[in-house]
Amino acid sequence: MDIQVIKTEPYFDQICGTSGLRKKVSVFKQPNYLENFVQSLFNSLDGFEGKTLIIGGDGRYFNNQAIQSIIKLAIANQFGRLIIGQNGILSTPAASHLITKREAFGGIILSASHNPGGPNYDFGIKYDTADGAPAPQSLTDKITEHAKTIDHYWSVAIKDVKLSEIGEETIGNTVIEIVDSVKDYAEYMQEIFDFDAIRNLFKSGFKMHYDALNAVTGPYASYIFETLLGAEEGTVLNKTPLPDFGGLHPEPNLTYAKHFADMMYQDDAPDFGAASDGDGDRYMILGKKFFVTPSDSLSIIAKYMEEIPFYKGRFYGIARSMPTAPAVDSVAKSKSLPIYATPTGWKFFSSLLNAKKISLCGEESFGTGSFHLCEKDGIWAILFWLNIIAITNKSVQELTYDLWNEYGRTFTSTQSYEGLEIEPTNMMLDALKDKLESLEGQTFYNHKIVQTSIFNYTDPITGDEAKNQGYIIDFEDGRIFCRLSGTGSSGATLRMYYSCRTNRKELFSLDPVVALDDFIKAANEILQIKEFTGKDAPTVVT
Ligand code: G1P
Ligand code: ZN
Image 1 (cartoon, rainbow, N blue to C red):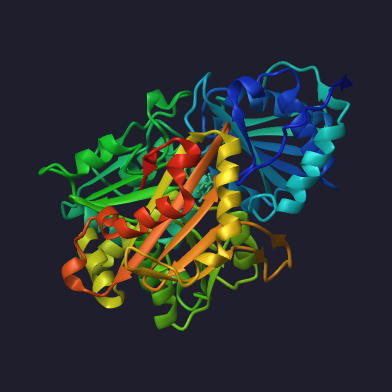
Image 2 (image 1 turned 180 degrees about the vertical axis):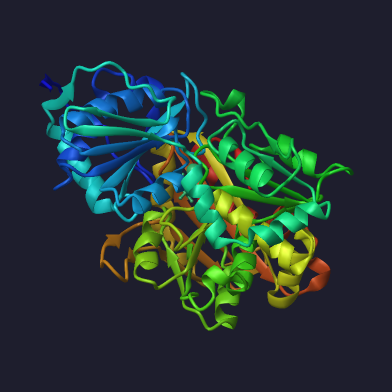
């Protein structure tokens, strides 16, 4: 097998964000763009020759073309075995699970997660290490460094590999194995949850709708919910992964999955509604005419964690990302468990999970996971809910009110301003930084600011430092947190996170945006969002 040395020139924008490299498809389609990044990744790794690499993606436009290029580079770079999801499909959690199950060196996942797909939209590539966790900052920094000086990559001239048939073939020194994308993951879920109990729930007439949003989870959900658990046919909607997600936005929240939320608010809505994002690591939970916020969902899972035998005696602690409202802190406290607040991005949870400091972690952006694998996991979270419902026989709404009655209700709202110009947005945050300290003691709309800070984080396990991860404005009775998104592919996205808490039961049914109105007004006054960005309203509210 002749290994070709292909000359190339560096691109200087191959910088990883919150979750790998994400760009418009047109950027990825530039000559050698993907190959440069993949070779830079391989150049940043040591000792993978002869070892296994997992490859798969969320099926979006450019998925399989990218996989064919990666196969060629991986063969030329002397990987021993490539394990690829059938038709190029692997959800992020399924890829993470395969990495550890098959003792791979690592895995490449092609996905831009919750960003839209298609020729005019986004593509992405991320790398998970041998523990199935997202590449740490030290590794992604190395990749960027290599990408700046790369002048050649290695490839082989072979025909495209057939991704549609399960089986093995050997090319050069590398075995190419095409595997069922769903089987191993589904088996693992059966080890964790009580499938008999959930099966009985469906048998008793419990109804569910699951929206795969034409993204990666369709095959997983159909097999797990309908085939294994006996939910009636038609439970899983939009179940075929499509290159452009059939025009749907692959982000399960109240703005982008409005069609689904609206369905769950009809009189004839089923008992339970759930959806996942493009690559299957996020989820949304709805009851009949009822929406569960991500921080409440995390808290409810925490509350019932040890009712699931898989976790019994293995509940070490909980982590939430700093933007996530602190609802779960009360649950942790009542169980005498440590609680950690980390920067945005799953990689910050991995070291805590691996060191058994935590068993459960979650983010405001509809991502929750546990030590069962080192990525967030949408279907796992949905199965967790189904298992809780099966053992308690309570509705989604009842479970949520139980939580509020016990710990108080935490209102949350995440408001994103997308498509902002970078410069004025940075000026706005610089101005906030300058006045941050002077805000302490000031009162806005009858709420007093008690403390402000810039969020800097030192990983308690690795000692790695992450600086300037956002601005915290703590009021006596609420909180504003803000930061810039690290997953966008163009311009800037400002994320404003609001939360406040009440123990007054008569306020529990308030609309969060109404409950948080004073804090939202205060933020606009403090940051002058409209004046700097020209936008008088957020584009996404969740
Ligand atoms: C977003 C979410 C964050 C999540 C990330 C990857 O990042 O806010 O919670 O970890 O996607 O799925 P952001 O765009 O805010 O940087
Ligand atoms: Zn995702």
